[in-house]
Image (tube, rainbow over all chains, first blue to last red):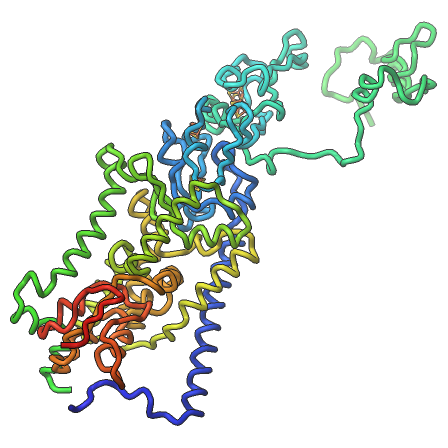
Length: 293
Length: 292
Ligand code: SF4
Ligand code: SF4
Ligand code: SF4
Ligand code: SF4
């Protein structure tokens, strides 16, 4: 029988060993390169963009990227089609679920079906009260276009908030422009805002003045050693450092005889101009400087 | 090569078609296509028709609201990344792993994986057009890549391979109607067409490598029990996605068993289809029959 198959065992041992080592090295190199490339790509793209929010109960982003198998069961069980899976090339990790508040916000289902559907725990089943969800944090980002900041009564973001009066309140402030009216400023409180996105969705402006961001982007943090004096005072039932000597504040010092604080401040202004010469005192003021050579 | 041989290489199975008839010359191929498309259809029933049979995707799914199935390779990546998944995922992965342990790991590749449709098409076109360009990577690359994906997950603490894994990306794209993954698949098609014969599934895919390892003790096997009838037409080698697995069973150097024991055999059954001499059969691992 003539053997049509290519020979495999003819090469001398040394040569075949060399070839074997070469192929193993090439395979290992190729394998590592591919894995490295994937790793680098993933690292470069692993920061959540500002307008992508994770479903309720999602672990912190780093843990979430370890846990989520990208099955989309949460997406399928969301009755409002809020969630979607990231496509390859999206700025969100490929295949992971997210939502965009301005497109479709989370309706904060009481039974949280998306969390129940998750088989891996990327969405934490310990979340049973949707009000405890922290998908993101709303921030009134644009004080220049928010209608309430302009002194109008829009209030839409406030009214749609499922956690109204806790997550978002209207804080009354004096309106310095009219000097007679109040401005009711929508103010978000991080201890109650779930990040559902309904406020951003409903903002009446063409570009929302209130937006919801992942919490790490939206929230600042005080240094760990900071204490708020008034809170400490309330907690201890009195000042911790005893009564203080009130030092005067320049310009705002206590009223002196016959002078209001305002007058005190005015007194630091340059001296008033001397009265105009009598000759011109009765002529009507005009742009003419009256100067004659 | 004679023109006849070249023709045979371009159209393996032509003789079988003439000898065995339309059905028997491609029945395993047709059954496989039914299986692959049927599984896609089960997933698509929900989004397209509104009646949910299987929800999720191949990474993890829920059938009829009760049966959880999870890809054990996905679970492994999750573990490597440092997350301990819930029980549901463990049960699902155990069911899937048990199924393929019993049946044969690469059965996934030939009967379930949607990428197989693409790479089969590329292989067919490469054969038909007689393209012989390119350079094939070592078939062991996939095992290195498999180790690499798990190491990358462990180092980064994130399932990084899943950012680009063409298998899950393609399936997800089909089920959830995403377009981005199609570029990846086009890349694989062109790679298999122009650069490496069976390049992706047979040499690179770490998912295939994982399922190969899972098939170490699989019961379902192909046997070359009729090997004495072989007339060296080479059709089985031309069609097999893992041609190296056939030789030890078909052309052994000593008195070896005719059963294809290599873990890389995908049990696609194409060798059975294209052989006009009925050399191959599907059997189980402990089939005692010696070659006829
Ligand atoms: S809580 Fe309801 S609306 Fe919000 S993401 Fe989950 S399923 Fe969708
Ligand atoms: S159900 Fe869980 S694992 Fe699946 S995509 Fe949603 S978050 Fe990820
Ligand atoms: S995101 Fe907006 S609507 Fe939702 S809880 Fe927070 S403030 Fe309220
Ligand atoms: S809905 Fe928009 S414009 Fe209206 S109060 Fe809220 S942030 Fe301002």
